[in-house]
Amino acid sequence: MFVKNEVLEQMKSRRSVRRYKSDMVPEELIEAVVTAGTEAASGMNRQTPVVIAVTNKEIRDRLSAVNAEIAGRGNSDPFYGAPVVLAVVARKEGTYIYDGSLTMGNMLLAAHSLGLGACWIHRAQQTFERPEWIKWLKSLGLEGEYEGIGFCILGYSDGEEPKALPRNEGRVIRVK
Image 1 (cartoon, rainbow, N blue to C red):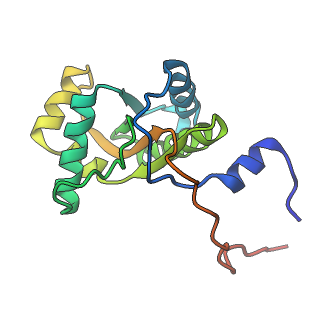
Image 2: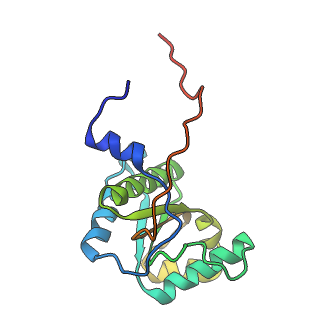
């Protein structure tokens, strides 16, 4: 039996969106999603993840192009037309990969709860290992060793959101 409350219902109904309208998301909704990310738990409260909110179309398109190149997808848009890209990078210390993953998860759930589509896009690690993008991080004031964790793309879904697939059996083992 699944206990019902608003947060748990949002967790059950969230799905990755892979088709977006070009309409820009209002700044207050972007800020709400980013804040949810920065409220994520982190090991020893180090708070190593940083969220870079990209709404500049030129930068967004450059990130998309490098992501497509890394993936070997030619001229496709791995960001599926989403107008907002929230890049999560984390300072390389402690549990930074896990902390950055929690940041991503919080943002995905927050976006869904606000009526936005969102999807985790990989290849942030490879993107932010490239000299051009290391230089870009430094231009934003991020000195030191950072690793890309993921891209949370955001926007308004263009069509119906995907339906949930059945959950795999055997994913919970109870020890009493």
